[in-house]
Length: 389
Image (tube, rainbow, N blue to C red):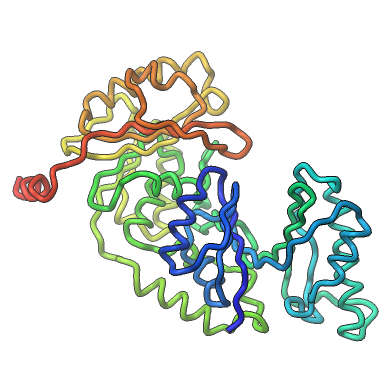
C-alpha cells in the first residue's frame, strides 16, 4: 500500500491537540510546525483523517517541497514532478490557494498561473494531448512559500473540515467548529462532567462537546473531494471508514450539556443545529441571562466565547458584563471555567487570577483563552453519593 506524507493544518496554538488526535488514530507524526502537523499514512488514513479529526481544517497530500527564488525555478521544479501519479487525464486541476511568508516570490496570482502552466506542460506528453478537457474530478492544490521553501499539497477535503454540515443556522460572530473542538479538548472535561456555555450563540461549543462525548465522527455527514479519486483511494476505504465511525459512536449516551443565550433567535438556531448534528437529545438549550447562571451540581465546566468589544457589544459594556459573569461564577466555586475573549481585563472584573492564559488567533483577531481551574472532584465516592441523592 502506497504511503504519503499528509499535512493537517490547524489553528495556531492548537498543534498539540491535533498531534494527540493523530496519535490516537494510530499514525506516525513526521513534523510539527506552526499551524500544521504532518503525518504518515496510506489511502485509508486519508479517509479516516477526514472523517475523524476534529481540529484540522483539511487533509492535504504532500506532493513535494523544494526551494525556489525565481519564477523560472518555480516553473521548472514544478514541471519536473510526477503529476500523472495524482491527476488523471480528465482531472480538473488548479492552484486554489498560494500563500507567501518572507519569500522572494510573493504574488499569489503569478504563483498560481505559473504553477498551473508547469503542470500542463508536464502532463501534455504523458497523456499525448495538447489541451485537457478538465471534465472529471477536482484536484485543487494549496501552495505555501516559507522563506523561499515551497510546499505543495493536494487538497483531499474540499470545503474546510470545520463545515461539519450541521451549522445551517448561525448568529453573528461564531467560533468555527474546529476551534471549538480544540478548545474543549484543551480542557480536562469529559462526558461524565457537567458542561455549560452561558453565551452559546448558535450552539457550537455544546454541540461539539456532545459529539466528542458521544464519539461521533465530525465528518460523518459530509462529502470529501477525494471520494471521487478512485485511482488513488478505493471506494471500499471510504465505506470501511464510515462503518468504523458508526461502530464507535455512542447513540444512547446521557450527558449534562447545556447552552444558554439571552437571544431567543440564537437559542432557536442552536436547537436546530443540534438536531442536524444528531445530538439534540444530549444537549439542553435555554434562553437565559448570565446573571441567572447557577447549578446545584458541583465540579462542572463552563466553556464559552463571551461577547467582547470588537465583536457584539461596545467596549463600555464590557466591564459590567464581565463583573456580572464573575458574580455568577462565584456561586459555582467548585467549577472550572474557560473563556475565549479579546477583552484583556477579564481577571480584573471576574475577580480571579486565571490558572493559565493562552494566546489564540480567532480568524485575524488576537484573543486569549483564559483558564480558571477549579478543584478536582473526589474520585468515585462523590459520584456514588450524587447518584443516591
